Amino acid sequence: MPGDSTTAGGVDEVEPVQQGSTNWANEEWVVDIRNELDQLLHDGPTALQERFSKKRSVIYKVPDLLKNLNNKAYEPQMVSFGPYHYGKEHLMPMEKRKHTMLLDFLQESGKPLESYVNALAPVVQDLKNFYDALEPHWHEDTSGFLKLMVRDGCFMLHILDSESRHLFNGLYFLGNLETAGIKRDILLLENQLPMLVLLKIDQVRNGGEPREEFIQELVLDSWGFWSRTPLRMGKCLHVLDLYRKTLIWDEKYVSDPGEFGQTLQFWSAIELTEAGIRLEPSFTVKQGRISFNADDGVLRLPCLELDHATESTFLNLIAFDSLHVGDLRGEVTSFIYFMRQLIKTPRDVSVLISRRILVNNGIGSDEAIVQLFDSLFKEAPILNLYTLKMILVYYRIWYYRNKPHNRLRAYAAYLVHAYHESTNWNPLAFWSILAAILLFILSFLQTLYTLYPYYHPRK
Image 1 (cartoon, rainbow, N blue to C red):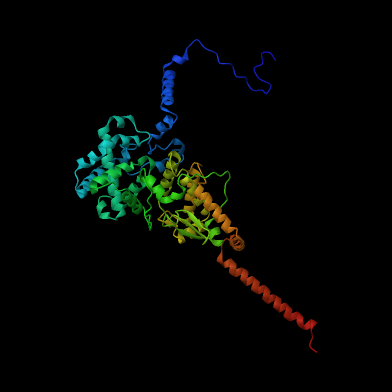
Image 2 (cartoon, rainbow, N blue to C red):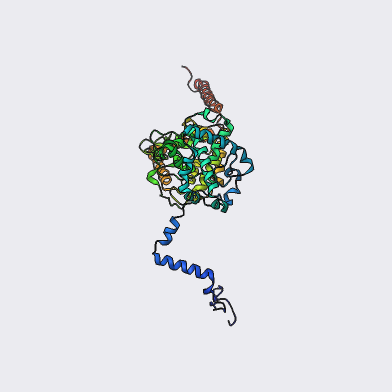
């Protein structure tokens, strides 16, 4: 119809673009973008990719989307490292301890402070570029930023060195509570120092070459990770990245995200053991940090020490996992989802503790651990439930469990499990049922003994 602004399908027609009186092509911002595009076209098709690849920010500000769920998990409680939280009032008491630790570090190393400053000064701009949301005053105050890197780097390295060698006398001015709080704060995403800072400071201290594997071993020892062979995880961006790789590293599956369109239902730790699958901690990369061997039916998982800082640490790992563009994307989220399916009841926790996969360092009851992993999964963004590595683990276990003899064993275990569930896992229920069966047999025999002479009288 004339004047009708809709088509037969009811969709508004797009008005033709009218040339207005203003020549927008001459606007300054339009000209700037056009010139920039012309330069990219002149430089070649990969120029834009190269420009993005030069972005080296790896220490991020956690977005409000995550902080609104659990703000305290991302905030330092004892000490600040780097620029993001420097100067906050509740962290200032530890700044005095940093100064004392710096003097102790310099005395122990036997190197002057100028040596460390001179080592970091040439790369100070690179260090600034590692921070994704560095405030303008840090860009202007290069001397202040350099001082921050030297002091915080020496402090962190001294803490790691003393913890890894269990030199508690080296931290004579820190109590156990303070030391535990510092270790928690070291693993916060917003509290990271570039790994380059630790490598440069250690290089000056030892007077040789950068020692990447030495720094890795410090972190391994400080957080109780133990491996029969060096992990050799290559370059790590910071301590949190190193901790992440230590937990889930598997060189074979790096940068291999999985694609799966449905949710896989998995069995709990109890159900797996009842089906004949053994759970063991993994100690070497050759075994795989997370792997299943269908030949011997062994599921290997990294050992997790659970304490007051576990929730905070895993939430920061998940945040880094979701913000960083690089390898191991989605690995932490996928691992958390896998563990959440293994841990459904306190009995699953007991099994994993008995297999040395979980270590309860004062986190509370087994029920508290179930709630911890439930909370982690609820607060984590749904990024990637299945990496290629985890999909292979799921399917290998599924095929192993569905072999005829394993399926029969699993069915028998299911009946036993259902019986125990119906009796609320009361051990007296078994003896009660056994006594009832015995009483029934005796009653049957008594009845048979009574009736037999009637139907078969003696001659």
